[in-house]
Length: 122
Image 1 (cartoon, rainbow, N blue to C red):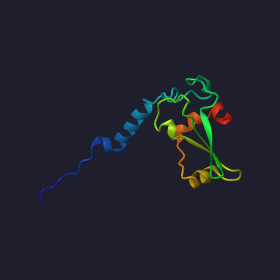
Image 2: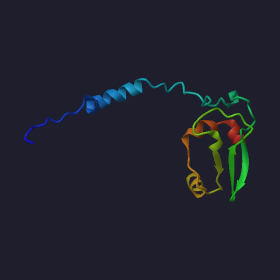
Image 3: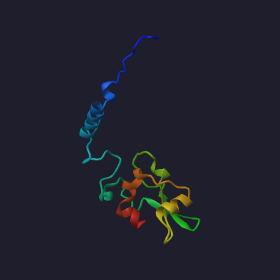
Image 4: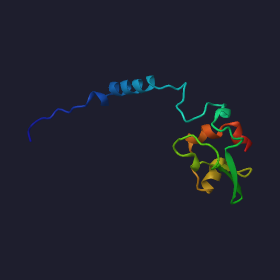
């Protein structure tokens, strides 16, 4: 028990090692060309099948909910588009509060699918 053990910190866990890892991570990112399955911004006309609106309207508890139509072609992604629900909040009620009241969670991965003309026209 009298043996002195010198503490050892691997290079990867030093400040310099962490900065090196962050630098390598950032350098190898391609922010200019998003990976599929996301459609290009403002280019929803290029979606397969080109439906007039990929959503259908459901009435539920004094609110209107849009869901991905089962007959619309959906690109493969996670979470699946079958889980997508758009909630149209009543006037004067915040989006966050409306979603919370309906036990829904905001999922940023769905934003590219709903930020287009078809979604707003549905």
